[in-house]
Length: 231
Image (cartoon, rainbow, N blue to C red; front, side, top):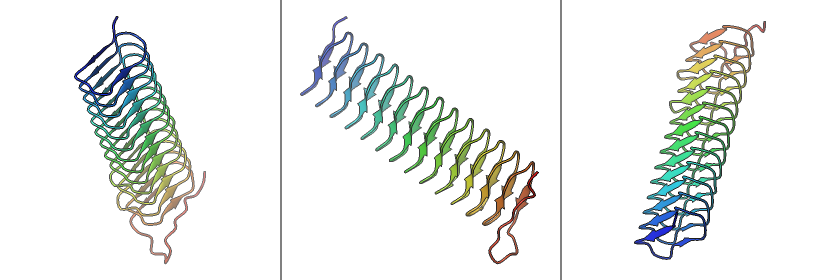
């Protein structure tokens, strides 16, 4: 039940039990139990249990259970359970459970469960469950369940809904609804609501709502905007 500091400089364990700092510099565990800081610089775990911080710099775990940060710089996990941040810079997972950020920069997951982000920059997943954001810049999933945004979909967003997919599209948005698909070389396109609507390789296209509407290819209009019939 003892705490242990080994091969470390300017390290501190304030309280708790079975906490360990190994090969660290300027690092601390303030309280809690079975927390570990390994091979890290200027990094801290404040409280909680079973949290691990390894090979990271200027990183921080506030509390919770089973959270981990590895190979990262300026990374933060606030609270929650089994949240992870790895191989990233300037990222934060504030709360929730089972959320994960890997290989990303200056990005955030605010809360929720089972959300994941990888290979992204200046991106955010804010609430919801099992949402995935991959390989995009300045993009976000605001809420919803099992939404997917990927493939260089820069400056794009899925605001809410379920099982929506936005891939390979820039400056585009899915506002709400379910099982929508916005993909291809779409630029500045939007699906506002409804179900199972699709925009495929359209530029500045808009589906307002309805069911199973589809736009593909470029409109011949000067400012191509196509609006579906709302049912």
